[in-house]
Structures are given as structure tokens and as C-alpha cells.
Length: 293
Image (cartoon, rainbow, N blue to C red):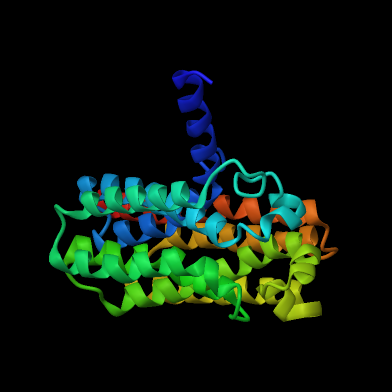
């Protein structure tokens, strides 16, 4: 194999490990971070922060995907949806994966160097959460809730970077994100439920059992209630409420999609949560834009 062909092969494998071809995870991480940046900045966030957090979201999600595949390297070959991932087909070594994680984490750290000390300090638990989540599937009954903390930690970090403080509203937003993540990632877990039962890992879909669909809808309802309370506490107007109402309707409609627990339908519902996050962001963006005028 020529050097060019070798480099092309490694690029393809690393891109697959990082899920660059599947941006849904990055978007589900990005939307709550953008909500936080706009609210923390009262509708006028520092655009340097928007760029840093957007790139950081991509890098850390990529690092999380690599460490996830490293952790699941002995399981993915037994799961229909993941049997062609790089580790499962023997296309990457453990050393390569760990070096890639280290490089992505280093780049993420370099990104936040211009930011304040509080943001640096908060990056440490953020890194720990991202790196440890894949291993929680061995012992936590609801690893999806842990993922919600990891996916939402950009919220308090955004407040820290924008305001050099982390007010109570940031932690309430994080709590809301935990329930939103628990909902949509349980939909994702339903698609793998038969395989996960065979290989013995833990997921919310398995823990909730016959109540998995009900748990998804309850999680979405709690998320909506928390976001409504946030809107009230901030005195937000009609644009925010319209965005939240549309998002709530979109989540409610997912019940019809997932109620029969069809694998492809549940995965489709999971993907639809990107639009939920986007609609809420559009509501926040429009609300603060109108206030500025």
C-alpha cells in the first residue's frame, strides 16, 4: 500500500471513529450550548465564544465517540447496528484510538486557553464525564442520565465563559437537558435492546422494561416543564413560548412513532430531536433579537 493510500485509509477509519459522517450527536450537544450562550449573553453572546464552543463541541463529541468505541470494542461486533464499526471489523488498534482521543482532547484544551480560569476548571469535570460515560454501561441502571450530564455540561461552561459565574439558571438548564437526553437516548437504546440484552450491558430501555416508551414521554414532559419554568423566571416573551410549544408538540408526536418499538422508527424519532433543539434555539434567538430592537 502506498503512503497516499495508507493515509487515505487512516483518514477514513478515524473519521468513522469520530462519527464525522454522523453529525447528529454533535448537533444534540451544540443546541443546549447555544441556548446557554444566548441566555448568558442576554441575546448578545461573545462571538469568539460561539466559535470556540462550536468547535469544542465537535472535538469533544468526536473524542467521546472514539473512547466509546474503545470501551465497546468487545461488544460492537455482536450488535447489528455497530457490527461494521472500525474496532468491530479490526480496522484500528487500541493504541491508535487512545492517541486520537489524546489529540482531540489536547486540541479542545488549546481552544479554551484564551478563556477565564473558571472555564478552565470546569473543563476538567467535562473531560471526565465525556471519557467515563462509555464505561457506565457496565454498572449504571440509567447510563443515559449520565450521558445527559456529559452532553449538557457545555451549559454551565458557557455561562462560566460568558459571565465568569455559574448562576442557578445554568444548573436548571442542565437538569432539563438531562431529562431531554434521557428521553431521546432511550429511543436510541430501544433500537439496540435485543442485542444489549444478549451481551449483558445496561441501558435505560432495559431498566424501564415495558415502561420504556412511557419513560421517554415522561422525560420529555419534565424537560418541557423545566424549560417553561426557565422561561418564566427570565421573563421571556411570545417567541420563546412559541418555540417551546412547537418543540413540545414535536416531542409529543414521537409517541406515535415509537409506541410499537420498531427499531427503525425509534431511530428516526431519535434523529428528530435535532429539530427539537433547533426550534428551541430559534425561539431564544428570535426572542432576544426582538428585545434588542
